[in-house]
Image (cartoon, one colour):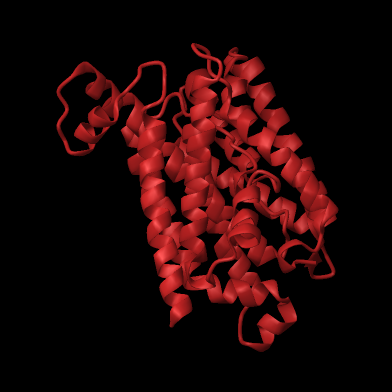
Length: 334
């Protein structure tokens, strides 16, 4: 009883701190926005030029960073538990690269041959292709080892990234666009992106919350899961489809943003040490906060220019990745 109360109190404090942090970070930028102006916008009182700028540019960008960060963190959590692999993440195992190729292909087809293909659908299809290619290449004797998954993910990611480069260079004739798809950016964030991605991330959260017990059992071993009536392959397919769908939407709007799904679940499990019942919402909140902080650095550190968002997350994620490689037993995995 006391543990549940402490967990609930911790969760409430975290939510309030998180809300205040978002307001603070959203006021930072080329145009200084006061707390009063930010709160006026949140209360629906949009009158001054700064308040209009905040509502149309700054707020959707911050909210999109929150939603994408939460979605990527949840995706990493689901993949790590399902694959029993501490290094599983949409970026590492090639899902993001496949979605990026699908999104660019739809744009190239539209401009080069006037054939209209839905960007999100194309990104989803190729993210699925990438996911299952990596999984089946890495699978050996019914198991996927850490090493084989990483190598397969790197190979497939290089393959799709190379195809993106070729498409943009020869078919699109716009080399600068490579930076957006390869390193990610929230500079073009719009309210329509939020309305498109938010339902998918909420759906991902609900699916993972319903399947969380099964994923935890599966992470302890496939034989154990099977003995309890869980179909490991069916569960993996559900998780792969969910993660691929959410990532295809996020990549279509913001390009590839790596390492969020790798860093956040481990940070929550290893540092916070919370009740398993509230682990998913904490992972989502932490992922959203992390990406908002990274995006704030990306848009302010080199003003008036912007640093690619993926470069900021990689600066944090790469050392973390090295640490995980050196410690294979992290978080109870093999």
